[in-house]
Length: 596
Image (tube, rainbow, N blue to C red; front, top):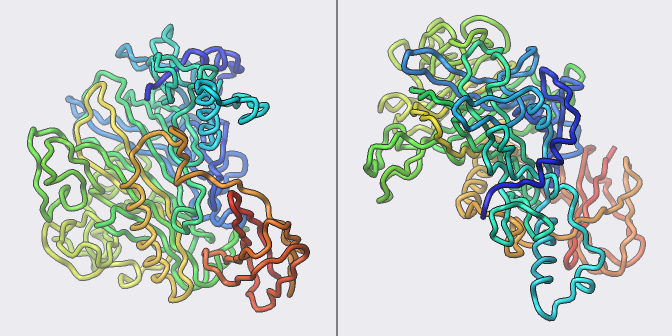
């Protein structure tokens, strides 16, 4: 696989040159049971037009578990000056990040006009990539007639706009967005069989940097470029169907070496009703999450709650930054970073990656445990301190002001419950379980960070970060049962991630988890309904099973279909949103139903 293109340059050049302080474009990842908004400067979920969440799961439910998320990164230079880029909510005139790639001449610069050209998101389906590859393979195969096999085929318009190559006249990198180089000539040309290289069955791609604007956080710029690719899979697997992946390719385009560098995914979990949440983490799984403070997530502030038996929602780091090289294979042990990192004790030198070093939280509002107001406060949260420079402690609310917090016991992980059985986060001293419920905390509006570091960020260094956002809802048992369901789903997601080869989906005819079925609508009427719902089944559906799934993904009703009109009794179902699904050879039919 080669990365890059020249065709893209005219497409970008034709975009309007309006210079704005903030990114304005949006795009949705929406191939499975999650509909998630992204912006080209790295903001996730928060809609700039409504200032409300646009991260919906289950899709079409009107309910949202995440208000905002974004990448944070910070470290100090050789003079101990803090360089930091941290995006929160876009309420500032100049967010720390802006769209577009930086120059590679050492100045790490970008103009406002170039940034505006990159104020967009490229969206690609793997099924289109697979068809494109198959078409050009047919062209090169004796006896294969593309007019018969692919009648009327045209290259998707988005392939021509794929930003594979940078503008060399602006000293940008030759290769930006990754691509499948079908003819192996190093230049991107869809008319020669080349195609975007993506992961998942649907992916977005965008590039952003921290050099265009002065930083609202107060931190000095780094000169970092981030090439982001969120992706998801079209699958019947319930864990993956309600999960999206976030892949960040991070490049230091500047000339400064940063020491004691930390990177984090900032997450403002708003689980339906935002004001009744609790948070926690699973230190061993590199997972941090939110769950409801009681067993009923009510509607509030104009937002739909998840109702009784509410879900849990979290972020898990699947791939962290590299540990600083030391020319040895660091052994596995029960201390950080080896305990929850990867590549330790595997016989290879300097392939160790860091796991989560700190899970942190802070509250909506001011004070030492509230929103960071200075660059120093942001950096403190990244390195395990409170805004007032005091360490996070074990017990209570984690702050020295709480008599239930142990003043002699620093805690790497906020509310790990019983997931640190070796005391990795407390200096080897094994502790009793600590969570927000047994601490007696009142539910509220929390923000969380999953921090990885410290490491040294050299000029020109680049690395990949991968996270997953995972949703789970238990059928019974209360909020902690949903946390247990989340942990199980995270295990499934991690196992799935580990077997991926990191290559391009759609290459060699493979798309995602296998050939993506034709997704067709299934009309269930009337909707809303009271006691009965109807569907008209074509002959190919005769004998197949209709599954009705509730909002948690559980199958609550199954009926065998016959040709023609089918009437299904749903009087026994509780009011709510349901999904009807039926699978035939090569096609999956999906429809939504509201039961009154």
